[in-house]
Image (cartoon, rainbow, N blue to C red; front, side, top):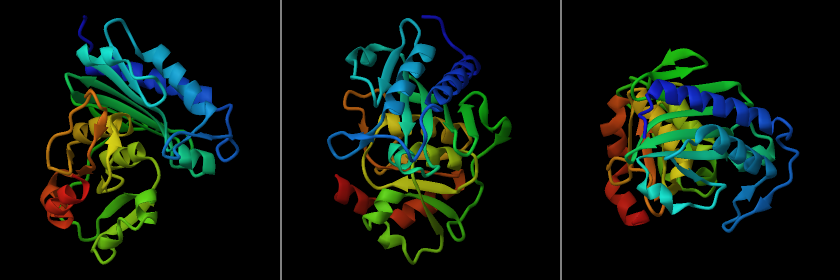
Length: 268
């Protein structure tokens, strides 16, 4: 299979995002019908339309595909290059008309997310990046936060986790907590240096985070799971433990704050 440079991959990602966003403009956030999967996760016709467009633009012969809105084809496990996408990450926010959803696309090579892009049409943000090229926000080069302390930092939290009380233990912390929707969007904002860090205390699927992981690492930040291990993609289960991401100098302060032993015992 012909090698694809990260620059070429980013051109394909950008075209796929543009096409998917154009396809979902027929749907009005806050005024769409939703059905519900097991676990009460909403899905809309916009998710399915975006999924079809992304697959058509992205996939070439010999490449694998993993998407929240497609039946999992296990042939991907034998592919060196796999597209991991969430056609509409933050569907709950999309249905509610909250501008915190995005289209999320990642290229995974040999288990590592090497390039990614997210587009939030509601805010006009397009964040693209790869390990070879770095990261841009609407065409301007950006990088992860260089803050060395959590004091005064902006940490993005899952709105659902906050509502369930899972962030109560950080209520007296020295950093600012901002609840937000899509996890892909949160990771992209960390990559862009708009926020200093984010973490999720519950398992996530690969399609939720692959693009964001690629962006954070491409921007010079760090990402690992709750066991402090690197995040690997294209696994059989496609389920990851929780995730921690931030600027490069925040790895130790975040580890101290989270107390990973607690997390491992809590989430196994």
